[in-house]
Length: 358
Image 1 (cartoon, rainbow, N blue to C red):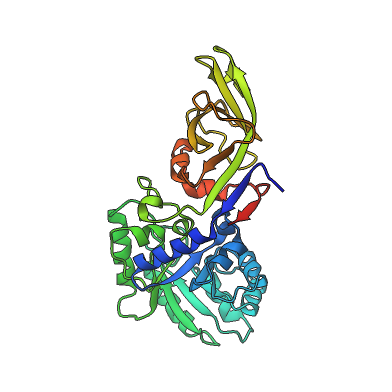
Image 2 (image 1 turned 120 degrees about the horizontal axis):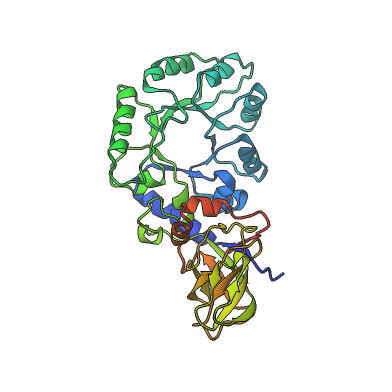
């Protein structure tokens, strides 16, 4: 079936990006973060393509269950942990590793009657102020976890960087210093680096790294693209022209007449809209690749269609292929036009857009 719009997923690019991350990680093991449907790239197919990852990180129990149901045997880490006795039993049944970031989660483990021994990651909040034990609470949390019966299979430590996307930011240095101070004298395995940490300039000394956006070819930095980091885009959001319109000078295009032709113009109508995940606030002038050449978006993004000025592209016709982001048009660039980050664009691709593996 020839679909008008689809997200082409390049599995070779996924594996290339994992290899690049390993080279940057200087011997650290890689927990591939595949939460949120692998950032819109398809949870199960992404994990299957990343068979060489040392572990997978997911946010929630349901994501882990989907991976196990697909035959994924690598360690799976529940990055938010679990919050109810029945969830703990499910985690035990499927051999998940747990992040522990709250005393209530320690109580769940203390009160559990399951004989299952867990590999536990203790999360320390070094400045993100989202999840984790404050450094002053860490010693108490660690002691309670050490006393668990049955004993943990292993204890590991992690924290999350709040501003690693800002190169050499003092806050990152402060977070690393707090982490090292809180864990001084311990020899536990540690994980600090997200994608920005992996590609940043500050040595973090991790045993494990937790890349997300970099796996998918996106940059964690606002001033650099993934290609500039040696990564390859994994998703190309592709569609095609469905109509060519002649728009006389002075006439408007789309809802609200937001764009007026300053000359007699040729406008291509393209099958893509906010119903597919394009931000409605994309402004006129945002580049779109039509037949491999850039042309400006004109008028408002509607639910199923956009309009593009192809006056300078005489070969554009019904059926001409279109790339909204991906190969030849970095998702970071489109995100800047939308006033957002590439993470949101990739995660926001609609469920009605089919994924096509390549």
